[in-house]
Length: 145
Image (tube, rainbow, N blue to C red; front, side):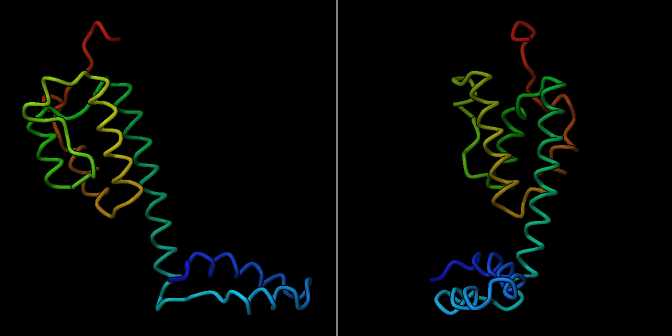
């Protein structure tokens, strides 16, 4: 299966074809771009949505850092995991007590990164986290600040 990303790289070659003569056209013949039905529009939409997700992800991480939030508390983190399937399983149930705050923070950030960059579920996950009350979040211990 051919890489469809070459279609977007090759468009710049078409624009500059007049300045480079037949060289560009020869490149196109050897490796023609592959277009799927509405592929360019879907790709552009995906890229735009992913950029919005990354902006929201950065804002969420800054908010968590400023407020000392590490991750949702165990029960809510389990709900988050079951609702949004963020690749890595949450530390909840028995593993909650066996993991450090740093391990929890790292795992939660991995989950957020995965959702923001690899899925279309980030918007719903973001809304879920914004609606959570502070009492449902696990915070840094005072001695860790």
